[in-house]
Every structure is written in C-alpha cells, then in structure tokens.
Length: 443
Ligand code: CUA
Image (tube, rainbow, N blue to C red; front, side):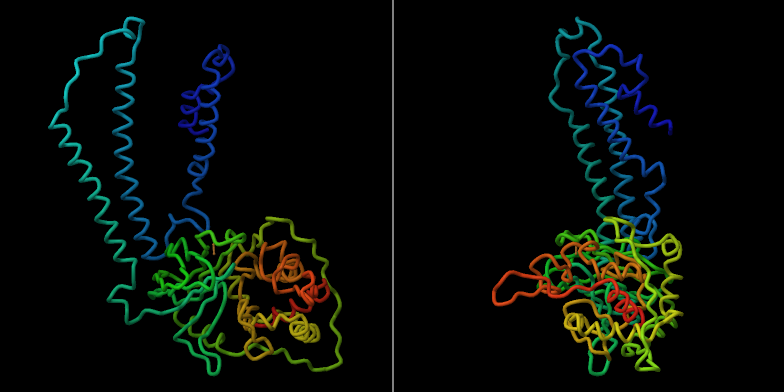
C-alpha cells in the first residue's frame, strides 16, 4: 500500500481493531469518515496505477498540437490552483491545530481582541488573486485562439472533412473528393486523415446535439442542430486514435464511438483512390454453385462484453492495414447469396453500396464497410462473429438502433392497416452468415 494511503487510513481512524474499541457518540461520524476514506481510496486508485496517462482515450498522452495546447492549459490551471490549495489548506491546518481549545478553561476563555481588517493583507490578497487569474487567463486565451481554427500559416495545406452526428454513429464526408454521379466521398465511423497536416472538421448533426471528441488529438466541440460548428486537429504521426461522442444524445450515447486513422501522404492518397471506387464485386464463376455450408455456431453476445479481441487491442493499426485486403477464404456463392439477401431484407433501402443495389441514406454508407476495423458506431471490432451478432441481434449490441425489432421503429418493423407493429422479417443465423460474407467482401 502506498504510504499516503496508510496515512489516510490512520487519519480517518481506519486502523486495526484495538484502536477502534471505544466507540461512543462519535460512531456515526467515524462511519462517515470511513466511507469518505473508502471513496477517496477508490478515486485515487487510477492515479497510483498510472492509469491516467494510459488508455486509448487518455488526454494526458497527446498526439497532436491541438490536444497538447489543451493539456498545457490544464497543467497551468492545475499548478496555480494546486499551489493555492496547499497554501490555504496549510494555513487552515496550522490555525486549527494551534488555536484549538485544549482544556475546559480554553473553551470558556474570552475571545481574543477583535480587529477591523488589515489593508495591507487585504490588498495583497486581492493582488495575488488577480495575478493568479491572469496567469491562468493568458495561456487559456492563447489556446482558445489557437484551437479555434486552422492557423493562418497552415491554411494552404489544410485538409477539410465534414463530420455529421447521427443517433448513434458518425458520418464523414470529404467535400474535396468528388465522385462522378455520387457527389462527396462518404464513409462512416472511421475518419481517415493525412498525418502531419492540419485537418479542419466541419461539425453537423442529423438529429440531436452530439459532441465530437478525439481525446489524443482534439476536443470537444458540440455538433448542434441548425448551426455550423467546426474544429481543427492534426496528428503528428500516422496512427490509430479513438473518438467518442461527448454529449448525452439518447440511450446509446455511451456506445457512440468512432476512430481516426492518420496515414502518411502516399498511403492516404492510395486510400482515397480505393474509396472512390464503386463496391467490389466477387465474380461467381459458376452460377449454380452452392455456398460451402460450414458455419460457426456463435455464442450469443453477453451484455457489455468487450467488442474486440486482445490482438486487435494490441495493434489496431496493423488490423486496419490487414482489413484493406480481401479475406483469404472468400466463398463467392455465399457472397452472392448475401448480396441477394441485402435486397430481400430491405437493407438496401437504408444503406448505400455504391455500384451495387443499395441506395439508402438513413444508415451508414457500406460501399467499403469490409475495409473498416469497426462496426456499429465504432463499438465492435469488424470480425465475422461481431457482424453476425450485430445483424441477427442488433438490440443486444446497441439499444434503440434503427435495426432493432421489438419497438415502434421503422427498420425491421411493419404495420398493416394501422394495426399493431409487428416484426417485418428477421435475419436468422444462416442468413446472417451470408450477409456477413457479402459485407466483408466490400473492401
Ligand atoms: Cu452522440 Cu452522445
């Protein structure tokens, strides 16, 4: 146990039993102190474990100038307020111990002579407060100016993207990348950007207020209905970063995530070229071929189970690169069956698969969904098992999503002549496998 915790527990009378034997009128205050000590202990655990500088969403491990400038402001504020805390707490502790009543005579003693202020002390305190505020204000204002928009000298080389919040996923548009007949290049849940270049992110929302936050790069700025917001960010090096919606936006707010993938200039150009292509088609040599029917039996996903494997967690960038290539054991017949189901199950009315049948605008663009590392709003690793769960049991993964059957949402539901809402169709396990094969072929 770190020494400070030992001190803490002694201070709050948490010592071994003999020291706690004589409990009388102060029992309740002791039990309060014990609870307080336990709470402090729990709160301090991450500090002692060093966890505050680790993890994909730690703001203490910045990877770009915008997040770094925000962290600097935090540290200045922490130091100034920390020094004030130590001074005030020190004087208070000193006065409490020095002047406390030590006997019955002390208790009933006359109060000391009262004075009416000391101009020198009062003016010094005012001056010290103003100084402390100025020390905090200067870097704060500088950071506000700096993080508001791309600096003048970087404007010429800056890249521009538009992020749009939906309940509960992110759409990304590339206004400078036009596709003939289709407009902007559109992706979802994974924002790919050039590393080492300033990126201006226009922030929009399709429904309620969301907030765009990439802890290691920049944040947070709200995505407001009927109002254009923006931020800028820059990744110093190529890398794989976590993003998170940071404004409560409904029942699946906590699982509304995204990723930012920063690539070198050449890789970024290659990625753009690949994304501008229409959907990949896997040729079916024999029209009468049947799928190789060897399906894994997936265990249903447990609530709150981790959505990714330790291997993915260890090297997400490596996983992203691998995901750009077609799977080794593709089954053309199964993929063809999946493409057919994608129409029959009405997936195509909500999702776009550019070059194939899908034309919907309600859900994420799936033209290259097989090349993404995550699905379901950045919640799950894009593995066959996870996508199968997502398609067959969407409500287990993300409550309230539009594919959820079981409540009055469009998606899988239908209603005949004003009657009750009923399940329109389901995706059974076998159909799920075919749909996964099709979607994973969309590299
Ligand atoms: Cu979107 Cu919280």
